[in-house]
Image (cartoon, rainbow, N blue to C red; front, side, top):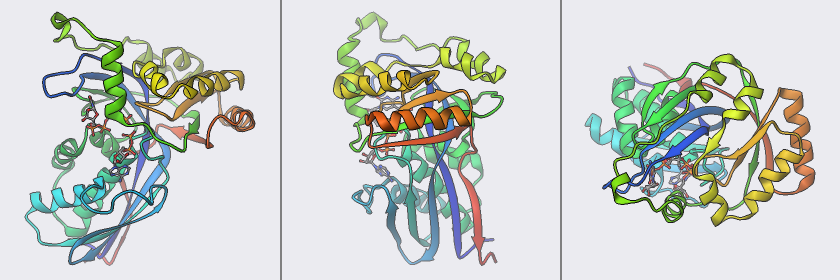
Length: 308
Ligand SMILES: C[C@@](CO)(OP(=O)(O)O)[C@H](O)COP(=O)(O)OP(=O)(O)OC[C@H]1O[C@@H](n2ccc(N)nc2=O)[C@H](O)[C@@H]1O
Ligand SMILES: Nc1ncnc2c1ncn2[C@@H]1O[C@H](COP(=O)(O)OP(=O)(O)O)[C@@H](O)[C@H]1O
């Protein structure tokens, strides 16, 4: 069964905890991370067409619309895997900041995989889609599953994490992104480890898991931490001012999300988030201050048109 038009929505993420180990032989760093999907979304509408094409709206209008774009790469990979000749005209509406440490490109890839799977009726299960997702990027599997999950391996091996309640975040978004490989390279420079540490795997303490189970933002605030934060600040010293501004504005805690430069500040509840956001806007440390909640669902179909 296939459709003539499918709309899929996928969320951006915050890394609540991120531990990094020394680079493996393939250049990737082993990670131990806890992802939380948040209510900042990428929307992909896929329509039947002869070829794969992409139109971008919202953020990222300067991004490539050919195979340089993760959404196009996702559609092409699915087409090859499913052995179909079908095409898709993709319209992507981006809200997640580009190169912001919130995995917007990964959400685009996840949303496109699911949209084209439905459009073409390829009938791949979630597990097969997750395998394709991991081929596209370390963060893509999480964008499919959403909610809260631990990521190990290069961040692509997921284990669901129990989480109670909704958390309220303030996001300080910068105009200019940071390159993920550049931040990992900076981490390498700052953490040059001896060769006998090469097999070392990063570990997460239990604090973040018990905090999420308990549902108390005051406790989660004490469990947040990101090993890439110092490297991101080294490359973008202004991030130290953003973190300080979040603290002055009364946030429970603040950290750089993933490889940055987005800073996520945790609030007690919705009204508190609104008040922290107001103070942070007045401090003028970021291009935009947004409020979001998490956890939210992963990539999901919003609408099918002309199912037959
Ligand atoms: C740092 C994290 C934390 O969640 O998120 P972002 O800040 O990008 O959102 C992720 O590990 C990013 O995942 P993603 O952006 O999908 O990375 P990929 O496309 O797989 O890899 C891009 C590049 O980042 C570096 N990389 C990525 C993942 C990893 N575990 N080790 C690495 O060293 C490598 O240089 C790789 O070539
Ligand atoms: N659909 C896409 N959206 C965003 N970036 C993309 C996309 N396709 C390819 N890219 C490339 O991936 C890089 C980082 O992607 P993004 O997911 O936005 O950030 P991050 O890895 O920091 O979470 C961008 O700078 C861009 O070069």
